[in-house]
Image 1 (cartoon, helix red, strand yellow):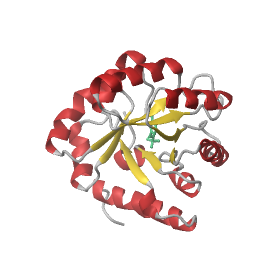
Image 2: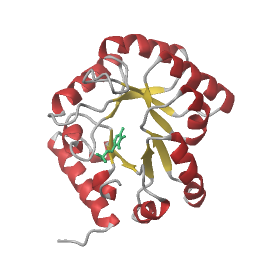
Image 3: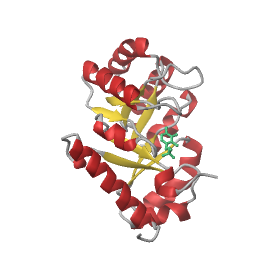
Length: 222
Ligand SMILES: *Cc1c(COP(=O)(O)O)cnc(C)c1O
């Protein structure tokens, strides 16, 4: 049993991603591991950076703005993705801070992001978040409304690269992942942001290009 370090946890996740990818006839290098560092302080993040991780995800603009600029000044090759819901009035801050936004889910946010990108000159990759389990409390566009929202995002000039979803808790994620993959194919989108600590291997076998892993890398959140 290797000792439980950031390095060993990272190696374990990579080994599991590689195995799942090979099983599905995919290249492991086609799956990006996003380390979800929400709620964790810089001191907990550094060991993972030292172990070689460079791609991180946060779910709140405010929290990311407080902790990442300093770390990024030290490690300029770090990339930061926003995976949580975004208020339109924080669009400019998000565009300035993040390299990708996984939670584009409504026309007002599309407009705010388009304006922010025009003002800042930055163009973070955009994922449309789909409410794949049709859950009222969750963010994401309804499956039926996806084509119209995608048209609106493209018309506004957003760099839309893929779809993102968080399936319902406590049930098998596979059918939801498969549905999202089908929707992405139909929309001509190549990127799929699916899979968290409990189901990232399933996500990889079903086409994930980005898995979002927090607990399995950092331990449980307070
Ligand atoms: C917190 C979070 C994750 C990571 O969840 P874990 O179960 O800790 O791996 C992934 N995606 C989103 C959108 C999150 O908010």
